[in-house]
Figure 1: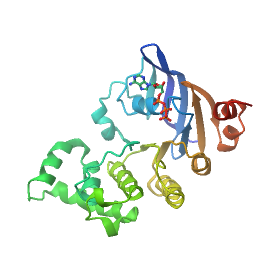
Figure 2: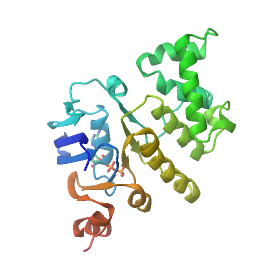
Figure 3: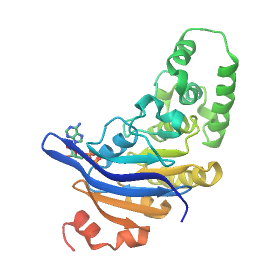
Length: 255
Ligand code: ATP
């Protein structure tokens, strides 16, 4: 197995009396797609929020490329090489597809870029490079025909693709995808699964995927981690996790 790109070590997080994550530990090997599953309220989003430094664990450590990220501020995560998408899309609805993707590439000077994009007509060298990169992603993700449209004019499925492009524009080594299949139809989900595997294979991006759509997770993941009530209950290949009695109990309420 490849080296661990991400190493989650005994993470505990409490909200008042609730233990949302209870000594959760697992690794994400470099160059893989890892699925993180669990019933509603299991702690998946809380874990993602720890990984992107929106929450600070009460105990434990999170290591990326063998370095702890706990003292890295949330705004510097993209510089480290960790990108993410959100359950509720984090796009600028009135800006074009290509400009939204450019925002993702401009993570170190995002506010300067936004003021330029919204007001100033001058095009700097940096913006030119960002635009070139954004067009490459537009083509890669099949968004050419809608590239100049405001994001608000796109279907939900296409907006999700733009969000993927925005996250890829920061050149992540690790991409955190939060329920990418949520709200998509069957065909879109098939396409998304292929796209995630291509992102791993063509661009060398390691993916950690939180997803309720079980057949997608099982079809595209190299490894699956299951949590319930904030505890890890299983970890292994999709086939191993699917037949794990604790996983079956967590989802069906019976063994
Ligand atoms: P879903 O699949 O429904 O999105 P989830 O697995 O992502 O669920 P979380 O949203 O991480 O679950 O929630 C885990 C637990 O932590 C829940 O009991 C939730 O109410 C609690 N929780 C999460 N964030 C907070 C917070 N900021 N304050 C208090 N409790 C929280």
